[in-house]
Length: 115
Length: 113
Image (cartoon, rainbow over all chains, first blue to last red; front, side, top):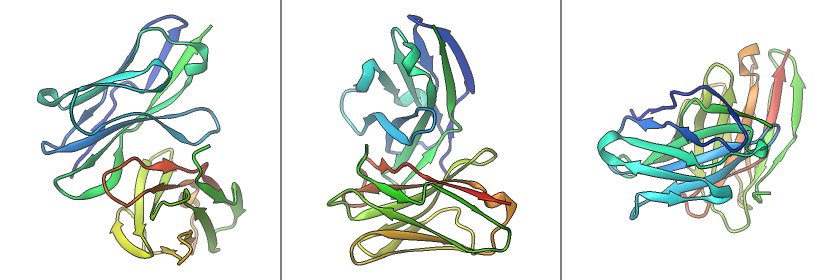
């Protein structure tokens, strides 16, 4: 069964610091990869997604992620965080090969940005 | 706003009771997914429906069931509730139930006392 690991459970940064959140998945076949964000008290919103093509994906609000197939990774980055980026971030995967369309989520990373 | 609506927003009930959670997908979306978010289990997939038919099952308990109606709204029924069922239940929808983006609703927060 596929699984997703997010190694950083809680990250605290100051405004303007750079961000990188790790995401590794276990499945070796063809996958679709997603990053979702959950602001306090709100629902999950899609930040960016990778289906195929350029492994460097740009999303909303200045976020980007890089798919490295050899490392089974899809790390999320932002060059300069803002206080408004305080939220929980979830990496998710769906597998093309197994036909599993439902998302398998990582455990989430809580980001706290201090002004 | 994702276009996915869920009711109620909050639900407080007692152990042993039964509740129904409702989800309306985005206009035009045919597939609905249900997920459970709890502190100990994280975000887990429960079940998927596509155009009224069950398509996939995840970690859904036998005490839980769901259906999708002809107007494409979906209901998740939770029965014989236990304390451990307290969680946030999300509904998501996608256009065709394939490998496209899923859009999430605001969730229903269930508290079982």
